[in-house]
Image (tube, rainbow, N blue to C red):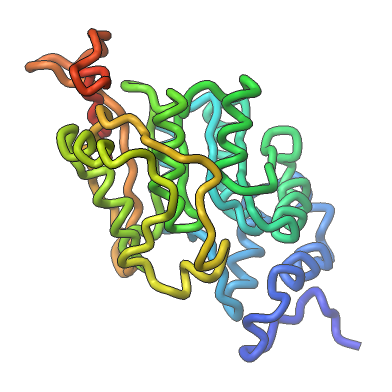
Length: 302
């Protein structure tokens, strides 16, 4: 009988149950004891499995953009929205740990994917460092904040339900988790399959956001320009955010796209700065007539 651990999936087997097949493929490797505790070996096996299956992983090229950012910023904690089967949690969690960080939070909606991710993270030796939280991203973010586990965003990777990019960011703003000179965001899939509402939001001016805020809190997802298959593949066509959000209109994001050569998509990442005149600083001030603080953080996306 052939050794099943060495068998690649056939070309026609690229959809049904592929996540569970990945788990079996990795855990049935004959040198499993040598793989244990080695994040890179686990990632390499995922890449090998991907030769026949299409997976929703960030991949090596775009992943390097984020790992370089981690090495530069050295965050104590990092959050990812959308963990899938654990590829990014292993790649980025290992990078955060090597940079001296303390904790990596991976927020995943699907409990089956989360279970697979937990087993791969355990195999990679990151079980005590990476924590997977199962459930809706907005509820999980709110709980992390209200529990006191995470009071501010240092580095957050967005790769989940595309219509939720904007509302989840606005929720973080509203909770005070987005902090000038501290918070950095990295958003995947902004070009393909595309996320026009998110790009429009992070590129809006203070005035534009204040005008939009006059319409009241956001109660539904903006799905304009987002492919229908993306909208329907997670929460469904009629789903709504768990919270009504206004965000913080005074936070302005200066954005830059990073598109690795040969890829359709790009990663957009950024850092909060407050610019007043020619100086870069943070300054508290009285509320304006509209009820918002006049401080204007600029998110610098490198």
